[in-house]
Length: 358
Image (tube, rainbow, N blue to C red; front, side, top):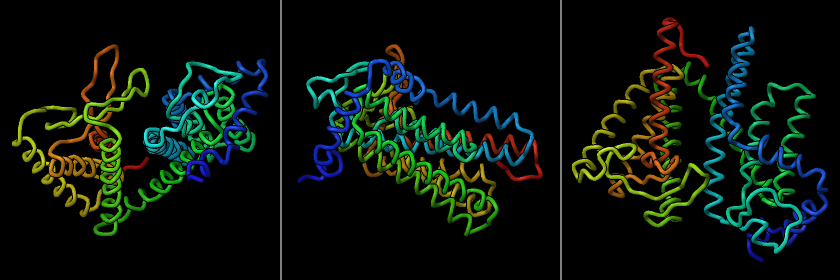
């Protein structure tokens, strides 16, 4: 018996449970399944969740409540990025078939039939992320509503004929792990903001190393699963691709030759040494986050140039035929790191006598 049969097929139970749920769902409930599957459980509503949390943090008068809401907002953003990176990699790596590819006929189907990339369920992952981020802020009745929301989104994906129960459970598990990791990360950051010298630097270096390892892991997976130039459509505006870039971020100065390869590598290493020195001197929380993101991203692309001869880019956003230059997680980290430094500078300008707080 293969590992897939044990962990995914469950000896046939996974498919049997899917058929049972899909068959016994009455037509009267299909509009409810559509609502939770395509609207309430759709991860493109994430900006609405973030704006709602931010608005609540601005409207409350209690300082402690404001910090608690903003902490959950940060946890949601961080865990969202981690969870969907893991989900995308697992979908491509495992390529488990969806119900439409396994069963010749389904009782209920909502939307376009899909046959690939079944595990995990992205909608179930998103619903669990929303519930987990809001859980510390909710009362008893609100928590009951959050549990019902997560269960109904998972049910809707099965009733709609899009996912197996195993896909839903995997999505819940990925979301839970990502939330725990993001929460632990946010617990560490205030500690680092209060420490100085080597102890704080050790935490910052660890975060930078996590960025570097995450970037290199994603590039390794893309290099293994995709041939050069391959692309897979994920949404109507986003593709996963495999390109090589000899230039700077977002393909600037691509094709400039070996001077660009070694020149950018030397520049990245020089900037990295400077950032390492800054982190040893003691920095505020937002400065530390910004320096870590830039440090990890710069080293990630430098490793590519030195070992592969070019940077692996795999994120391709497009709209109506116009494509933004492909980029990678290291580029994203550098961009967000710069944004954190700008935020830190603005905060220090408003309150020069205090460290940054979030």
